[in-house]
Length: 546
Ligand code: F6P
Image 1: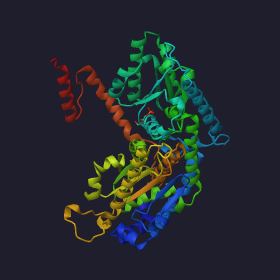
Image 2: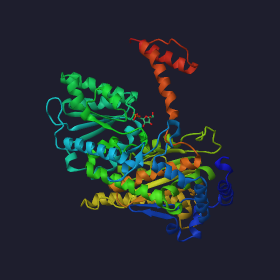
Image 3: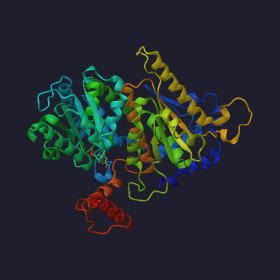
Image 4: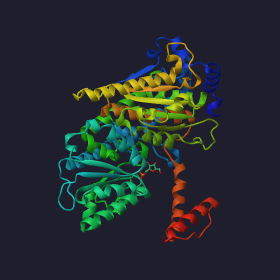
């Protein structure tokens, strides 16, 4: 039996037919306390669901669907380290990375909390050494330029966090410049290397597998640049200019990373769930280990909330279930992430991977094709900038889009800079204005003179507002763990494994096959006619000596 045949699903379908025509404006008219009735809070985070097209009955039915899907049992499996990543026979224990020291979690006969704490301590040594100016390049100068080379989960999390938490930068980080390089085509690294001093540049090679070609090719380019500039041996360069972070010690050894420069994590941490591990080294360099530990503590608070709070008051559960309502019952297939805080500019890209690589699947855990929609298309942009780009479609287009407005209540309040405080106030006003109009449309206009058709706003676009008290490491940890658990809950309802990503593997193999004719400047085998034609056009252009 698939989830669509269960009683709660059928009831939700019937409920959607009955309530489908309700406008958010009606829902607000009917219930003057709608905000109070549909808002949840956990410590520094408030979630306002009142602008979702839901009623009390919707939430009750959604919670009964969650219960019917055995969500509580799945949550326990997640936290206790069951091999729920079945296609790779692995646990998904990112929550263990956030457990405070002194806890115990036995996995495969070992207390992994000890391993995790040991690694954090090694990370701390490295952070302290770099902060103290004691990590020196080949000429003896202290390194001041840090370049994280990684892609996907080995890039997006730390990249997002370093920007998000820039206000929490520790003074020791002021002399450091931290950069991120991910693009396979070399354009990022080429641009950067021109302006870096090789003697003071340290590369962090971040890769769970340490086989990702994007990362290794950028690493080789970096090595070649150092070799040419320094004239010293590779052994010295490996020791002074590279740190490796990986789940594969062997691969790091093969690449030449010396023992003291290796940091580890484990195969039971998914790449896109790994910013809490040593992969977070750039974050710790930016905000210090104390800040990093606060981020872990915030995520741990969310873990505890998720594990122990009844579904009706559970932030990740309700965020997920409202998403299920939108996707599967209101047939909304697009999801916009709209941060109203420039520091969260990389949140949409991070969530694109987290959500779409996790739940962008069409077979269930048993290999059956699903007969329902799963992960919607997710994209986003800093809200105020998006207002000048794609909000036209949100307000007057034909697509229903669900939106997450992510905003901070306080910013710049200690800055002593009234202009900046005002800019934050302006941003808040825009956030509230946009979510209000998206929900209510032109019902917000008081006078009842009918506007011409091009000035009409339909409204009824559902949104959740996620309000952070402030963007602290702690609150940020809560926010990201919220989304991680949301993704997990949805995977349980859809019956899919969110911890593998086989859909990206075939492309890597095919790229290897296509590399051959491109390197040899000759196509030895036939592909499809489009690929053949494009190869021929490229080879012809490349052989043109003009
Ligand atoms: O190709 C997809 C992927 O495996 C992601 O899941 C992962 O985050 C990324 O590549 C990078 O992988 P790695 O950390 O092993 O280099």
